[in-house]
Image (cartoon, rainbow, N blue to C red):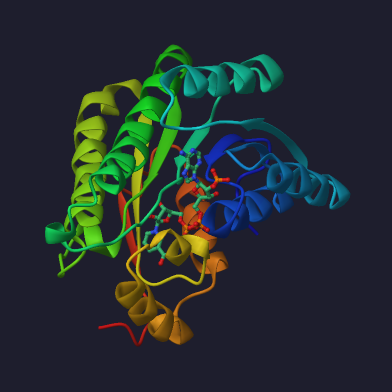
Length: 245
Ligand code: NDP
């Protein structure tokens, strides 16, 4: 159904949720996927599932807040498959809290993973994509990259940053035939809520989960953006549950 056959796609945060769903969908449609995350058992199991379904996958345990590890990930993709067609910068965490709680370590982690991780991914693949004179970088932001609510300060800040970084990237690399896409999901049923340490906020989110989208809905958006002809860049997609305000 999707026009992704033989595309080499690196997916960060492939061990669960949106990244896992995207990896499965793209591989089912003939893409060669490079899976990255920290939990090796999940990556091994996903690679096995993809291969059992006739797909092609490799994995590399990668902490995207480590610049050298992300560089190694891009190099592995090129060494194995000869090029990088798409990077899906999807890995992220969402430890929401109120600013007065002063959860400095969580602020630092969000900035390291949600912003620096995205930058490291871009930095790692750009030299290859510029040399190829083609490429596609998909960065997962959020509806919270458009609107802010109480307790979302730092998380929203990182997702606004992802949109800003992606727009600058679009302008800088248009002449090099590198497409950019920002994906902004609303509520999606994944493990992301597990990263919320504030019990009251976590309970509120869990109570709203009944209306959340399946991760496959976002995987479809990613596949749609990749499937377009090379001359067409889908620059941003917002996908919410219909019932989400
Ligand atoms: P999950 O928690 O299911 O997935 C997050 C993924 O990120 C996991 O695979 C995790 O793997 C990976 N990850 C976290 N930290 C790191 C790290 N340091 N290095 C490498 N990988 C890391 O959540 P989602 O699938 O929902 O989240 C995917 C993206 O979607 C995130 O950017 C999130 O902000 C965004 N999003 C999600 C929404 C939702 O409602 N679920 C709404 C809007 C945006 P591991 O722990 O194995 O490293």
